[in-house]
Amino acid sequence: MSKKGENIYQRKDGRWEGRCILGRKSDGTYRYRYVYGDSYQEVKEKLIVEKSERILFSDKRPDKEPEMETAKGPARPANGVPIFRTFAEGWLAARQFRVKESTYIKYRNIVNSHILPELGDIEWSCFNREIMELFCQKMLSPNEKRRNGLSFKTVSDTMSVVRSIFRYGSEQGYGIPFDISAVFVRKETKKMRILSRKEQDRLCRFLLSEPSDRNLGILICMFTGLRLGEICALRWDDISFSEQTIHIHRTMQRIQTDETSGRKTKIIITEPKSSGSIRSIPMSWELAKIIQQYGRRKRGYVLTGKENAYVEPRTMERYFEKILKTAGMEKVNFHVLRHTFATRCVEMDFDVKSLSEILGHSNVNITLNRYVHPSMELKRKNMQKLSELLAVS
Image (tube, rainbow, N blue to C red; front, side, top):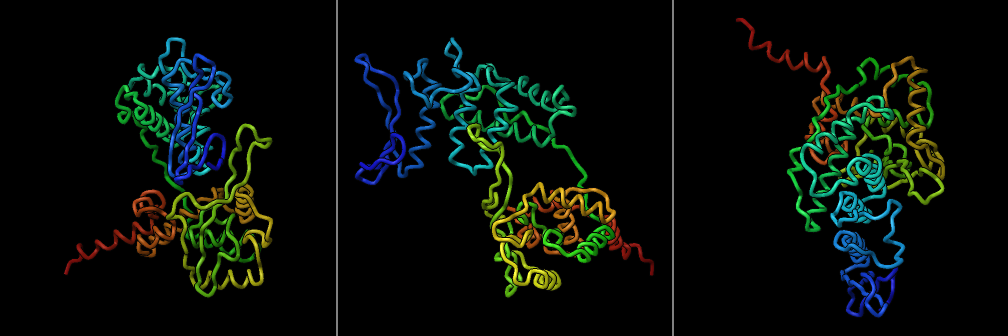
């Protein structure tokens, strides 16, 4: 058998086999548990789950097995009753090889920062609706560290992870002690800011009067709806002037590194978060003309014009704030450009399905509910359509 990875082998029949230590026999030799799969990755994931289950179902750990030790100590109390921490850490380990690195980092931060400090040592069978509702309320309430409490979005994301952990525990043979679906966070309704037509025209004129790589990037976002991470990762070879399209297949973001890394954060450039976000966006004739005139003979990243130099998202956000100040405009966040693009398209009677695909949404409802904010001009225009019903002959 050929070996690949720690205690994972490929069998002669093509399948993969892995083993982990269960403990020692009376004669001092190790006892093993074997798992099988059709790929190395599948076996690796099964071993992770197997190791977490050993914490659940055994009061004793294998002697001196480094990978089973944790910085937080044993996951079970002395009475042998499983606690929430056991399932949370098992769920997190199982997710690590199934999701993107940035998604795993987000899950890890939620678990370690918000969930384990409050719920980690509670016995599984003791959970009830009252405990979880108090948990939600505490997250939303101000404290010494958070003057305004956590945002509704953060609390909602945290509860989504908690529900997944409860489902994971159920899959391990421990029933969910109460109806977790009955606990939810009421969404906070926020009025989203968009640029008025006057503001948009003012910003557009300023960007055209002060041509630069970054200003061109802002202009592209205003008339295509690109996300901040997408424009930062956009390269000149992603733009086709013959087809008049911009191909989006990468995004850039700064994420936290693992605990063993010397640096706290790093920049990653990966595929977008969903398959729907990989798309080709047609450009208007005027936008294509401006981009072609400015970008003639340029290479590398659009925001720098250089092959190995990029502008990261938070740097671009700060630059956008500076541009607004210089142009004498009110401060807004970069994402307002995307909201404004979507709203202008609806005002001009765009087909909503086409707009949804241009924005890279998985369905039309996301486009309508999250990004389209009818202006007073559009409301007046629609209400005026009723005038004919009042017409007197």
